[in-house]
Length: 370
Image (cartoon, rainbow, N blue to C red; front, side, top):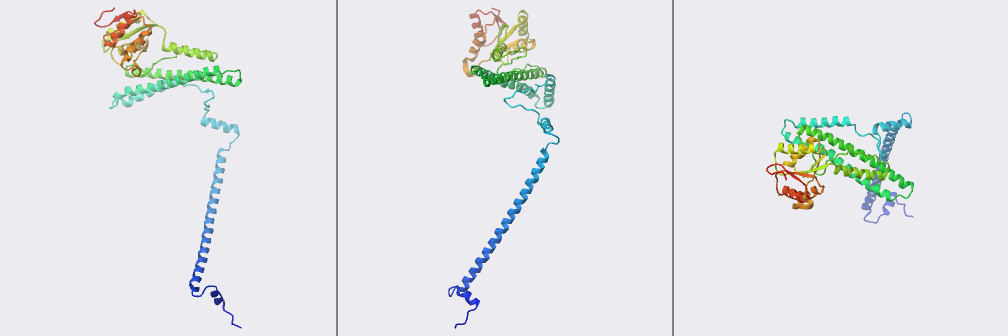
């Protein structure tokens, strides 16, 4: 019987002859690599477990801190009162706003402080000549917000008209109409508030610069003397439209004024004072020219508290014919008389058309009254 082989020999028999050494080395190398990979995976998993445990601990600690911070100290009512004290009450867009408007005296003092601060900043510096333009822009801020609020009020009127036509007796339609009416009243008060702020700022502008504040485009009207005491939506719409017409086309004796680059202040003011004495309810109509005789007449009206309506040419719509179209629009209001200073062909065009309509013309300057 053949002698038994040693364990080493039996192990070597598993490998083919001639390659026993190299195969054995590869075998042990593979086992070493597998062991190393297993250890690396275990170490990585352990690190992930540790990181997850730390994150959970941090989250739980933060949750406990937040719960302690927001927990009511005494009762839910106390927590609600604390929140109102910090953030105040701000109604949603579809809810009525019962917060008061700015106090008139506070507005007067604040605007005066702002104007004085601007003057002190620019006075005695290289930018002193820019102070008037900056103050004009300050007044224009309130004027633009006033215009924006007026547009919102017009949109509200349109939605009220639509809601009136959609009324079918249901509670839903009725509540929606009531909401629109309340919104209209709120917008009216907001518009009047911005108008008052603009007028206060304009008065300070006049005191500081010596010139009346006038918008570059559009009209400067005031609704303070008008009321809108209405009962329902139909009354609100009719009262609003009526007040707008009265504001932009005020009742009174209309006197037209035209002229070019004529600078005789005394002559212009003397004739206008005489006309105002004869017609105390006088309304001055002019072309809104930023210089010359019409600017002098505009400053006279502002000084005397006379309502004035500026008919500016619409260059975008009528191009070269804009001044003549403006003359037609001014005469369409049928003034009872025209005061004319020496000027260009545009002035003479208005004078000739006025005579054609039978409107008397009073000349200032070299020409005699006709």
